[in-house]
Image (cartoon, rainbow, N blue to C red; front, side, top):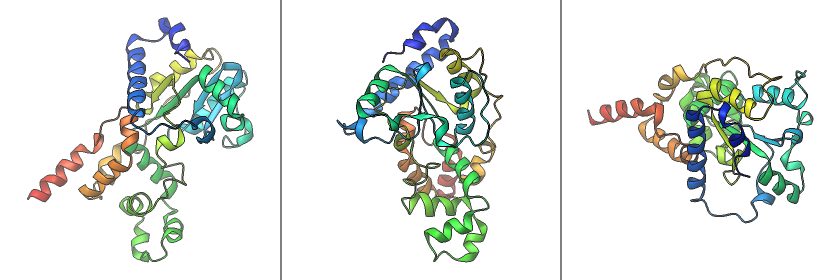
Length: 279
């Protein structure tokens, strides 16, 4: 559908934010056209992360490590007249999911509902996933992937080891949603009406609630800055320049589809490594 909710609520959305959202949608549409067309997209795509709230005519595709737990709690409140979620927010039965509809129903929902998504700078999300999933659990995970990894190497549980063994050398990004590429979670063929950025969460999350008409009984919790961002350079400095470039290539679509610059926050690391190599 067209951006009906955005158009109807323009007086309440700053002109700057409205322009920002329009630019993000345009970038996504242009970049998505470079992909081979899939005529069976509605039948074949993975819609297991698309939450459907029928009474609000809202679809929200959530991506792990982008305040996904908080969004589930907030969306539950939105669907249940402000009632707070009790218990595990990861239970599948607390929401209706787009994948559970028939192909015809899915198409109708995709065409007519307001569709929202939040994304994050790809390198920052990957580091956040590592710190959340791998730190302290690395030994078991690494041994499962490659029993030949030396014990002393695993004991370090370093971020470079994670990148080399999980992302660059093995295809485990397909099976683990925490470092899977955005395109594999929230396909770009969906014409999202609201593309939020995690970096602007404090401003953009409340605006999404306002645009969907639930801000009078649902509020987004106070934003807590990411604990990963201050350590970006420290962690990524352990990779070689070639590995950073390979990582950027692997997540190339994430950068291009959602308007993030490569190498972004890692420019200083690449410059430092280029200088040291020249020396």
